[in-house]
Every structure is written in C-alpha cells, then in structure tokens.
Length: 268
Image 1 (cartoon, one colour):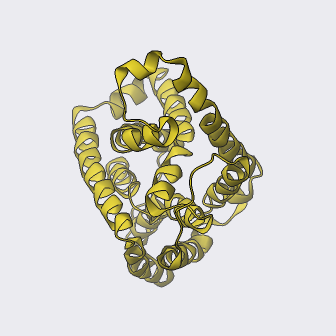
Image 2 (cartoon, helix red, strand yellow):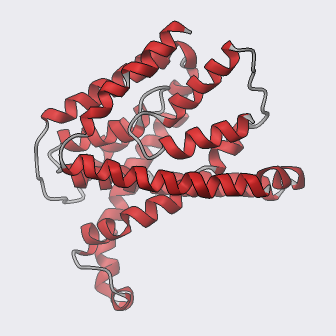
C-alpha cells in the first residue's frame, strides 16, 4: 500500500512545481501520525524506477520543443542523417553536462543528505512558494545561446532543490526566468537539464530490480503496472495544464496552493 501511495504521489506531482519528493515525505509524515510507519527497505529503488514513467512523459511532451531549440527546424526523419544536425547538438550537450555536473557536485557534497528532512520540510515548501510567486514579476525573451555560465547556474540551483520541500521544477523555472529566458523556454530548459539524471536513475533502478527475482515480481505486478500507466496519463495531462499556465504567466497560482502543505507540516 505504501508503495502504491508513493507511486501515485511521485508520478502525478512530478509534473507540478510543488516538490514531489517533499509531498512523498509529507505523505509518510501523515501516515506515521496515524500509526502507519514506512518500513520499506531500499526505498530508493522505488523512487528510481518511477523515473521511467517520468522519462516517457517528458519525451512525449517536450521532444518537439527541444528539437526546435537545438535544430531550429521542425522534426523530420531526413534531418537525422544530416551531419549539420549533430553539429548543432554539441553546444546543448555541453550545456546539459555543465548543469548536471554542478548538480552532481551538490549531491556528493552530502549537504542535502545531512539536512534534517522533516524539520526542513516547511522551510523548503516556503522557498518553493516564494519562487513560484516571484516568477509572476519576471519578464524576458532572451535567445537561447547555450551559455556554459547559464548552464552552471541552472545546475547549481537544481542541486539546491535536492533539499526537502524545494521543487526542482519551480527552482529551475524561476532561475531561467531570472536569467532572462521566456516562460516557455525556461519550462523546456528545466526539464532538459533533468533528462540525463532521470535516465541514469531509471537505469540504476532497473538493473537492481532485474537482478533480484523477488523485487521483479513485486514491482511488475499487473496492478502496479496498471496504476503506473494510469497515473502517467494523468501526469501528462497535468503537464499540458502547466504549459497552458506558463503560456499565460499564471504558474504563480501554485504559490497559493503551497500554503496547504506548509500548514499541514507545521501542524503534524
């Protein structure tokens, strides 16, 4: 049951700028308040496996936008055989690597791991709320030049979002807007720099599960797979809704929602 609840929260909220990991911690805190304790061993495996649906959703939603950002032409199969296409990909790849290397430096610094998860949670939620509301006042339409400096800055703040309750999506979107990018480009860049991290996490989770027959049976049960597919569809639709809000500069509406998890966390 805890795995199923975790799955629902993680997959659905991954598309929203409100911290999926923070809401997982909040769900565990609520469950423990009512006497249900999370005793799942190797819980990181579940978290990593749930990056698989997130990867599919991201590719379905952002592929066309990412392609236009890099190649500056609508996608055609014939472009895959053109050498010029791959030359255009060099700078974006370096940009993504720069961002993710800085994020990895944050991860290995153990700052996030050393933070008291439950105590910091309301602070993290508050930071998310402030960034969401602050995005309302940011304007810009800077052309994407794949600057290494911008990549490193986005990667740094993506690392900051490892702290509990701080939404990675809200943080990188806010920073993208602060750097002068449009809402749509900040939205696409936020998920583009996450792509390699999602791929790596999912692959590590899959390797671990495939090596253990018992885990394989548990995680690939029919109802688990049915739930993942259903929740992934809902998550995709939510991502479309978020894209609509960004197009009309209304992502800051989620800042009002953040009052709810902040209050619940403080009351428990």
